Each structure stands twice: as C-alpha cells, then as structure tokens.
Image (cartoon, rainbow, N blue to C red):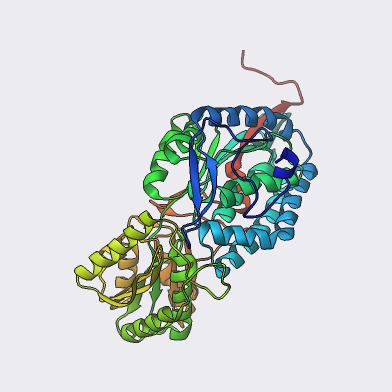
Length: 494
C-alpha cells in the first residue's frame, strides 16, 4: 500500500501497523509487534510496532525541529488546522464509532459521549491559539514598561489511557498543537489506533506540518518510560492509574518537566434522605455503568442514608439487571466487554472478597469471555475490597450512613479526591455537603461522570495534579516570560 493510501484511509480495516514519526508512516521490520484485539470477540484487529527507546528519541528529535517553525506560524493558521481536524472527525464519525466499538469495547452510549465530546473539545481547543495572552504591569521604576508574555513550552509528551482513548488523547494533543507546541504521543497499547494512530491520520489529513505530531505505539515500560523521562519533554500529560502516575511524575521531575497527571478515583455518590429517589437512582445507574464503569470519574461507592437504603438498593439492582450486555456493534447494548483479562480478574476479585467480608451480592458477577455483569453489592462497609479500592468496573457497592457528618466522613475516607456527587431536595444543604467533600469536582443532583471543555478537570490528594481544559490547560502548556523595557534613562545608586 502506498503512503498516500495509508495516510488517507480511516476505518477499522485500514493499515495501522506503523509508527508515525516526522510525517512518515514507518513499519520497521526489526520491532516486536503488539496484537490489538477486539475485547468482545477475542479476534485480532491488527498488529502495531512496539516502539524502541531509539524510536522515541527520533520522535522527540522530529518534534523539537518542527516546533520551532510551528511556533512562528500565525494563530489563525494553527487554529485552522485544529478546526479541520474537528471537521474530519465529524465527516468520519461512523468509521470512528466502529473503531471505538471494535478496538476498545465502546458501546453506543459511550460512543455518543466520546465522539460528540471530542468534536466539542477540538473546536474549543482551536480557539486557544487566540486565547493565550499576556499583559502589561506597572513598574516601581520610572519609565519602565513590564511586558508579560505567554509562549509555548516546546514539546509536550502525552501518555493516554485505553478507557476513553480518543477523547482523553485529543484533550491534550489539540490544545498543545493550537498553542504552538509539538507533541509526542504514546497511546495505551490496547487502543493504539483510537488513542494514537487515528489522531496522526486525522491531523495529517488536516494539513499539520511534518513532525508537529508524532505517535509511538508500544509498551509502558519501554516507550512510555522514555517519553516521560526524555530530556526534551517539557510537559508530560498522563492519564491513568495513581501507581503508574507516580512513576511518570518522578520521571518527569527528574529533568524538571511539568507533570500534568489525571489519576485514579474512588468517587462517592451521596444520597441524602430527602433526595428525589428516582433522580438519584437514574444518576447512580449511569454513573456506575457507563462504559462498564471503566472511567476514572465513575461512581465507585454509593453512600445512601439508612432511611432510604433498602429502597435505593432494590431499585438500583433492578435497573442494573435490565441493562443489555453484548457486542458493542449492537446499538442496543449498554454493557460491553472489559478491556482485558487482567482488568476483569481484578474487579471480580474485589467482588469475591467483598462478599467474603460480609456483603450481599444482589445482582451481577462474572459473565462469559471478558464480560462482567452489572453488579450491585449491599451491606457494604467502607473497608471492604470493592469500596476501598478503585474497582474500575460495573460494580456498585452501597454503603449506609446515619447523618450528613457521617456521609462526609465516609466520602473523604480514601486517598483519592477526583469526583463526587450529592443528591438532596434542599440544594443549599447539598451544596454544604459538597463543600466539605475533598474532591476536585463535585456535582449536586447529578452523578460523577461530567466533563465540559471550558471548566477545570482534575483532582486532589492522590488523584493527580494540574487541570485540563480551558484556561487551565493553556497555563500548563505555555510558559510565562517577563520582558521589561526601560523607556527613559534610569538613575542608579552608583
């Protein structure tokens, strides 16, 4: 297949067995291969190269060369390329949906949010080219002008996850490019296409100059570690687990790169006794089972007032049992497969241990293949395995509390602080509880899975550092420069 054919085809059956470095699609013969499989069927989708340290180094060399020229382009040129990428996503939406379904187990409800959200994010990112601004400050020295400028950081390294791969890759890639940076992207190996190579193809078709975006597929211990530790990486944007994020952050700060880390969560869904039970259950079903619970901001624990505990649990279990499980290519399916066997075994282990610790399995458990049925557990305490760990699956442990103080205490009894939600008929009371919960994002009379392109996204405690979206990501992907101009002769003391 010719290079022109490779670079213009977007489909699950397209040629993806390549690295993308300095505008070239490379298929090196001497590299190990990573098998990309369909988690619903176990069938092989394609193979991709396992990038070596040398491949990553070449990607950074290309990115460094390209960035100097890219930074000098006008804001409207950079914005136009990013907008064209958004238009291409709209144009190839059906093909992209199929890629997400086949490669990552994304059901239609996830595709709806991921594709729609991605388009919105990219259009918003295009505006960043004009929103990165400085200013003028007064000086205590007569005749001096202080000029504050915002400049690109240089090369941004991006290590993205497998759970919402397109959206969580592009939320870093598009802003970095719009702001005049270049990028080296290492997608999760399970989603090398939708989290990496697809972006390369879209931006290539959008007219992005060679070397501004480079994609190296590969493993975390080799390619990922080198991206995070590369001396030319000025910012490393990582989304993933807290243990891996700690290693990525250490690799970054060793050479004074800024680590933008969005890590794990153990997110509480607090239902006070005066809550609208229908609304709270609706929110609880979506927040626990969207994308099979494989979301850093999904509901990890349902904290429910003891007076409504039994009714809430009964309703949640009934709703969970009704959710259709199967191949995401079926539009009616709500619950798709778990991404791989290791993830599935870990969450089933949490379920089994929680039952052994005294909880009751109301519905759910192991399904066939890589499937886990929507699971509801009652009689749970905060110390049980499915509650104190980030289970990252379609699992809903329900924990009772007696009053608002205990609800807040239980919500905060975790090392994480990413997202939370609170339900009450009294919005002022709900806001009071929300204000006491230690989380970067709290949603009143809603659930925890919320993202908007113009509001800050990130956590506290062990859930990471830094914020994505809007002016917050602009701050992280640019650096401040102070230039002073002495316009009148200055008197010195000697």
